[in-house]
Image: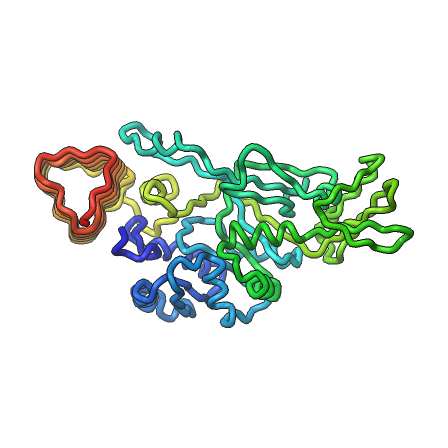
Length: 438
């Protein structure tokens, strides 16, 4: 898979980036910058966009150095950004959530950042026959811990990955500002954000060590949205937001700083204590848009996700595919050839110019362009890319086969990844392996 830029990895035989671009186009967001790591990858992606979206979108493709991170990529193209509000979307997002809905919430609240949150996915095939998904679930899960106000419109706390261990630390200034906070561990940051451009550029300039939007920029903006001061006889005394301020009566902090979502004015909250009055001032607003559970939202950020998304797009969320399905609930290109007594089941795709021999069986799988598949071949829960050759009697289950690979006769694969151009020898059996040319 390394030979193909990530943005062009196939989902139901369409580049994954096409799913993002179509959603942006449907929301009438057509002035785009596509940021790609590496000059060669940027050329490939730019060439594909030029052909596929001519006269439909205004797209500038910008190459950035590899491993600069998402914040580094934004920093590299910051001088190109001119609109008051900027939408940032990961190119590996496959979703039917309209980006325009996020943009509308962002503008409604005059937020500095609004992030899309959706239900956290459960990885792995829904039917038995592949252990890959089960193994995935057994691994320790990396939670997102997200704090929301009672209206679920404002983002009050976010911690991700390694930050989340045995305890959660919440800023005192936030707790002073709201009487309740809802803590959620079942939501995923979908890597779709709306930013106020002036604040985005300021943070990128001032925090030049920030590499990640999710792990650096977003937590920073959330942390800095409240500021604590202690008033002595009405005069503000600077106070660090994490220092202790003891209150005789916790009920003093009952007003909700975020009570009126539609007002754009800043709110101040006062609470009396022995030492004076604490003032919590809101500096800016960080908002959340929580997608409906009925919406589809997945990121192609692992091999397991690649398999899951391919199956989903020709299965339960076939409306995303853009294809017309047959009466058998599958997609077989008119130029594809199928031998006698070969069965291509529901939720399958056999694409342009591919050929299958006799007595084959295909279940819940995607097969790409110009593949040559022999007789008595079984393919289950798998993705086979383009120009793959598969010999007679092979069995492929829960696997990903990259372009130009060759499986010689009677090869058996279960939960494997086969790299581009790799030859799997005749009669060999592999389980849970990554097979690639050195």
